[in-house]
Length: 316
View (tube, rainbow, N blue to C red):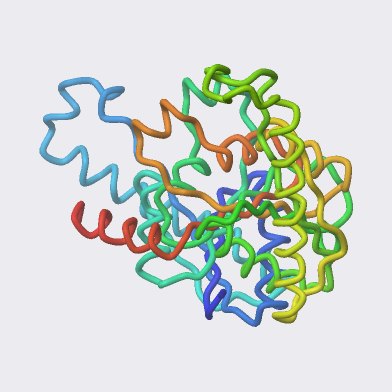
């Protein structure tokens, strides 16, 4: 699934250092080139005095300074990274870090983007947004978000928790998780989180059938589904250590089980909701990225990846 290139987006932070360690390990295990990018942010035009905005030379000078700073900081990061692994190429950019990173991933035809996350709280994240969130939403390929590292040991080899639900996106996530598990010698655990309501909606539609009996049959079908999924993975060359069935909100259950297992990586599929749908409906993958303490790999389905590429092409 991961063809030839991994793109690491770094900004020199502690979170980026953890992401770099993960990137180095995966590039070696997956036999992929590692590309490193540093994006120097440009100042917000709305925060610049009006007289400066209209100056004919102001933005030319800003871009020159940003380009110089980006190359300098990138060189510093590459020097540190080359002490622990091999880098195929490095890329200095300036502008919006999320947009430049996503665009560069498309230009390189990267199979994976890895980025650190500062783990902002829900209020700050809502107000300020998140570079890692934006990259997850707009990159054409899977994105691995590495949090600010509450562990001192390496994440992998360890336990990988894969969330499955039968969707195209979950199938793509399965292929990624199996490949990483096999390459790193990590235990692979599956989880299917079944959402159950405390009481039935519109109970008169049940025609006298008890809600409890419906729930029990649904749980049995869910157990059969997750067991079949495990059997299929093993038949195709993967090794499943355990298949878990949870009941409740899928995002909360995935995060909870990840903590119980001390997972070194959580892998989830993403349906790639648009801005309005995402705001109204929320996203399991978004929530897992925000709340899990371990790295989270978000994988989109093939169809969603094609839609993203087409949308980005229209913008440019």
